[in-house]
Amino acid sequence: MTEMISFEKVSKRFGATVVLDEFSFTLKRGDKVAIIGPSGSGKSTLLRIMMALEGIDSGKVSLNGETLWHASGGKNLIAPSRKHLRHMRTHVGMVFQNFNLFPNLTALANVATAPHLVLGLPRKEAEARARRLLEQVGLGDKLSNYPAALSGGQQQRVAIARAMALEPKIMLFDEATSALDPERVGEVLEVMRALAHERDLTIVVVTHQIGVARAIADRICFMENGKILEQGVPAAILDRPQNDRTRAFLRAVHPG
Amino acid sequence: MSLDFSLSFAAQIAPTLARGAGVAFVAAIGGFLVALVAGGLLAAMQRSTVRGLSITGRWLMELLRSTPLLIQVYFLFFVLPDWGIVLNPVMTGVVALGLYHGAYVAEAYRAVLDNLPAGQWDAADSLRFSRYQSYRYLMFPQLVLPLTPALGNTFITMLKDTPILAAVSVPELMFAANDVGAQSFRYVEPITLAALAYLFMSGVAALVVLLLRNWIKGRYQ
Image (cartoon, chains in turn blue, green):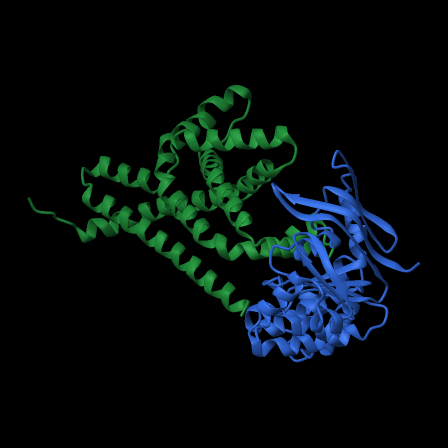
């Protein structure tokens, strides 16, 4: 059907550490999922695998019906070509915890450069698209600012516009609000919430901020030690968790 | 013993020394440009995924950094002609300075590249920039600022290495000062003036680096 992301028994190790343990997971087009869990539970690695920034040791990952990573038994690893990875990345955009804006480019150029160089749009068109997106995230007056002259919240909004400029079907947010001052979280969350209203856009948010998960997601997965221990609608997971580990985590991040 | 420094003699030899200083400066500038390119090639070789290239690159760098500059100058000037490659003295100096310091410049390139935050590559890859586009439009422009101190030092070191070129009769500053001294039996004035000239040129170079850094920093604010 319209399966957007699928993980089949995916395992991933860093040295002796098991990051994903026979992880299985499916998302349909338009799903908005938040993955919560303690640090080191494999949440970020999951996103990096979807973005083709990280490979797997065994299992299979598909995006939009196409195989991204396929490996069986850890022995017959299929190393996808750079060309294949670049192709698969057309489906996906990613927003990082530390924004990762290019410090040598203005806000406008940060957003316009990929449409121009990668999609081959004429410079004028790429800049028009970038201007429109930056206006959407409320930065129409900061087009010619360099990242160093923007606040964290503003930088993250540029980063969201930058990822959206390639018109991905899937948007990944890796702790997108975790590096921000508390009073800056709202402005980024507002932009993320606006994206969550786009019906066909599939969104995966990794966070340890429960408020962010609640604001964006229609499904929440609690993850620990490379596995999903519990998942369901936000009200069920956040207000009536069944699993002891989920309860312990929620108590830890939300005391009282 | 008293130092008697004759201003009039100093004024008389100043034009000769200025010509020498000009030659030294040109040799250092030429060598610097060669070093920027040679350093880039050496760094690219070292980073190459082709094993033969990366090993050759490493050996070349080791060779250039582990032998005296003077020997490299001699090699270029006295040995290469046996293989049909004849360089005039100034060209010899430019190439020798450029290769010798290029090995250090390659190290500087490598260090700043390794220091780029991994997040920059994550962002570039996730936006589907090709390797070439990433280096050309995203990474290299970021390296200019952190490179300026090391490259400024390299240039000043090169300038101070130019006296070695006297060994193959490049009429640079030290060569000129020596010449004046030998002919007039007065060394105080030529050596003092030569030192002042090196100091002046180094100072100008340091100032240029400072202005360049401030300009780049101001640009990205």
